[in-house]
Image (cartoon, rainbow, N blue to C red; front, side, top):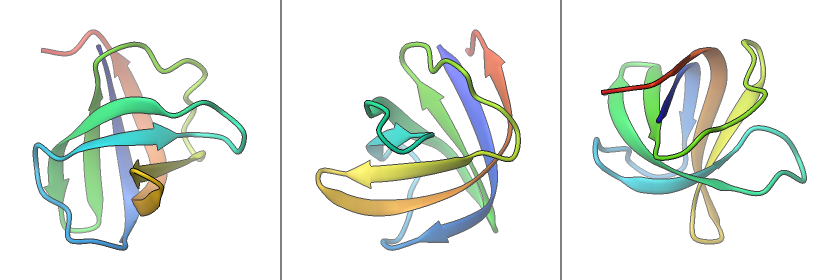
Amino acid sequence: MDIVKCRDAVWHQDPFVGKRLEACKRYGNRPVECTLAQVEGGSFTSLFLGRIAGVAPGQSLLLYSGDSVYGGGIIEGALRGGP
């Protein structure tokens, strides 16, 4: 599992912990399944069931619910492993 923490969140729908989404960190990348693990003010944490390679601070992370943009933010950091 990987954990990605983001800041400067922008939401197109009301976020809630436990929401299952798909995430992309770069244009053209295949979406990766994730769950919102924490939403606090202008930041959020996503938990990825698998690995999300090449994550770096400063990149954007876009979250999708089906074909719609759910929200996103700027990556602060990532941890490998998880709970």
